[in-house]
Image 1 (cartoon, rainbow, N blue to C red):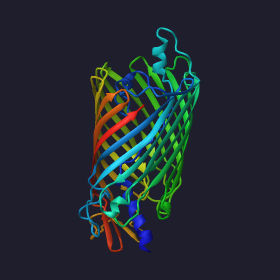
Image 2 (cartoon, helix red, strand yellow):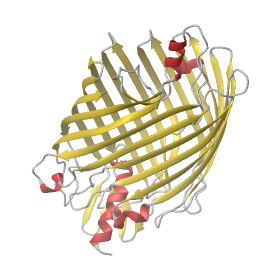
Image 3 (cartoon, one colour):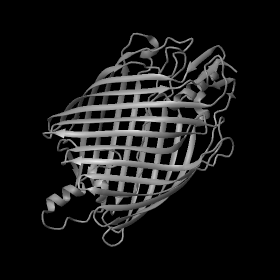
Length: 458
């Protein structure tokens, strides 16, 4: 096996935990009701800051141009460990990001209700939201291997909800991401990755909407741009059905089931993942909420180890006034991966957001994941995957402790300009190594990023 193939495989093996994942929310369930959802959505969205008036491009449709400039420092561009042999350990770099894009959308229901006053707001034929953001990542370190990682990231989202206020509505959601990912070693090219998800769904809310059912189909593709990494390309199909019942003003019951088909790679099998869960969201007091979900999941991998266990989430939420949110919780779930069949997470997390005087906003989130990988081959194409250190290679079992902290501080300087800063810490502690010939690389790393930000939303 030549180094030209061995090194990309090494990069892909480390990539499964080496970079913060971009997650595209895919939901066709409509707006949340009362219950604990009124204490803060599960996504942790904070109270929003203002944006400019935008440009009217049609009846009820407004375009909001966006410009962003970020400047800061990354401590470990290549996600390295100082114990790695043959590499130069951690290499940091100043970084500048320049982003341009915009959002296109119809007026939200909340604004129509305000404009209607005591009257009935008009029934909407279409609720539309489209966002696009092009981000140039420029590394400023003099080292040639760092500066070569400068590249363009792309984010695109289009969400169209037809007849959203009617008992039966249709939703179409399209999301595309080009993730710019530096390699995990100086001798490896980057792992830039294109991901696209198309969601087609229907929502049924008879009567006053206390009972709601939904079904949607998701087609996803996950492609690596470099030819040597295309053995990890995947396509997936996912079908989902679910429903919820708003019982009294403060409690909601919900359930969901989904079944998928995921094409395998040369290093792992095809799979038919299944998840079934039910839960409740309730207010214990007007400011304290509780979310409980439980269920069962199956990976159904055609070869190798498979997941067959419980799913769980327990989350508490606290709201103090309209501008403070606090949540904390535990979850257990599994995720398909590139090299191993899957990994299982036991996660504990917390998040908060607060807004002061309508201008200053602080957001923070921390999580600790106890992660176990299953279905890692001991060897593949001449690459050895092993725990217990690069010298001993006692087994291919892998257990990680992944910690992440995100904090953001934003100040609304005027109706369209937001100034702020952000800090991210990502740490992966493991004794797992990937060995290719004379080269070895630890899968563990510590990565931090400090940013100063200016965002204009016209």
